[in-house]
Image (cartoon, rainbow, N blue to C red; front, side, top):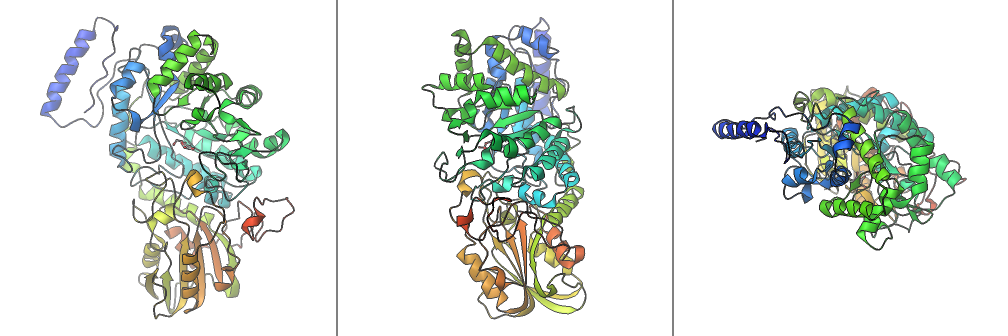
Length: 622
Ligand code: GLC
C-alpha cells in the first residue's frame, strides 16, 4: 500500500489538506485492494539542481551522497528523515531475500520511493541494482550470457540489443540505475570475475562497453533510461595473483603495472563508455601499485574527471572505503570524497556516513565545494532521468519481464557466444533427419543454475532450478520432438550400461561470484573428467559442451571428444546451443587466450607465451 507522498516538516500550509487526503486514502485503502500504482505525488520542493542546492542543508547534501542497501534499512522512514539519495539491492537483495517477481520488486522499489518523496524537499531516490546479464536478481527475468560469452560474439549491435532489453526489464521493476557494464579487462583467468569481462583485449572490450551503455541509457540519458555504470575503475582485471584482499587469491588485489600499461590496457573502455555518455563510474576495490583505488585522487579526479571529462558521478563499491588505510571511518570518508568519490555505497551505517560527511565539512577536512560538486553530479543524473516527474515504476514494462520476444534474443546471443574449439570427423552439425540415438549426461545437462552461473537470483548463484528458463536437455527434447532421434539422459550416472550413436556431455563449473571464484588451478574437475570419459567411451561420436566462466585446463579432455564447445555461462536460453548443434553453426571467437597449463597464467595475446588456443580462435561455422 503506497500512500501519496506527504512532505516532511516545514512544508507549506496546505499540509493539513495533504494529511486529510492521506487519511482519506488510508481509510479508502482499508476498504479496497491496495493500488499497484502509487497515488500521484506532490511536486518536489526544488525544481533544478541549482535550486535544490540552494535550499539543501549540509545534512541533506550528505544524505544525497549516501547509498544504503535495502537489507540494512530496518525503518523506511529513515529514507525521509535523512534524505537518502540512493538505495541499492546487492546480489540477491530481493523484497524477501533472494528472488521475487518483477511485480514484487516494483512494489518494493515504489515503497522506498514513497518515503524519499516524503523527505523535506522530496528529492526522489535513485535505486540501484546489479543487472549484469539481464535483470538477474528477478525470478522470471531473461538471463543472457555473461559478458565473457558476449565478448565471444564480438557483436556490438547484439550487445546493445541485449542491454536495451535489460533496460526494459529493469524499468519494469521501477529501478533506474544498473551497476553495469563491467568494463574490466581480464588479464589473469584465475580471477573469479573473469566472466564479468568482455575479454583480455581493450580493442574487444571498448566497443562492447560503448554498446552496453547505449543499450541501457539510449543515445542520451532520459526518462526511459537506466543509468549505466562503467566498473570497476580502474585495473580490477589486472591484479597480481596472490595479492588479493578480503582473503581472496587475486580479486581486489594490487595492479602492479606502469601508468603507460594502465592507460593502454585498462583505460580505453572507460574512454569509450564516457564517449557513449555513461552516467556513473564505480571505483574498484583493487589497488594500483599499492594505492587503494578508493583513495586515488590522481586517477579518479585528475584523470577520470578532468582529463577524460567525465561529468557523471562516481560511486564506491560495497563498503569499499572501509579498505582505506585511514585511522577512523570519518577519515576514510574524507579520504574517499576528497579523492573524487561522489556517492558512498555504505551500505549499512548510512547515518554514521552522513554524520561523518557533515563533521568532516564542519572541521574543514572536506571542502564544501567538493560536497556541492558531488551533489551537483548526483542531482544532474536524477533530473536527466526525469525522476522528479516520474519517480515510480512505469508498470507498462512489468509484463514484458521474461517475455518470449526477449528470450528469443537471448537465444540468439547464446548461439553467437558459443566457441567451437574442436570438430574432428565433422562430428557437427548433427542431422535433424534420419534415425539415430543421442545419450546426454554430465552435471549441467539439465541444470539451469549451472547454465546461468553466478549473479543469478542470488549473489553467488546456485545449482538447480532457481528461475524460469530452458536447460540444454529441455532444449534438446524440444528440438528433436517429432524426429527420428531418440534421447536418453543419464545425468551424472554415467557408468551405466548404455550406448548410442552420439553422446553429448554438458558440465564444467558450478556457480560462483567475485573472489569466491578465484582459482589456483583452473581445474576441469575430476567429476567432469570421469563423466566425460564414461559417456565418450560408450558412443560413436562424442560432443563436449563446457559451461565455465573462463578457460579451464582441458588438454587431457580434448582427445576424448570429437567436438568440443566452450559455451561460457549461457543464461536461461539453452536452445541457443541446440540451434548451433543442428545447423545454425558457430561464430564465437575466444575473448581470452586459452592456456595449456595454469602455470602459464597470466597469459595474453602478444606476451610471447604459447597458448592451447589463441585469442580470437574459433572454428566457424563448423
Ligand atoms: C559488489 C561488486 C560490485 C557490485 C556491488 C553492489 O561487491 O564488487 O560489482 O556492483 O558490490 O552489489
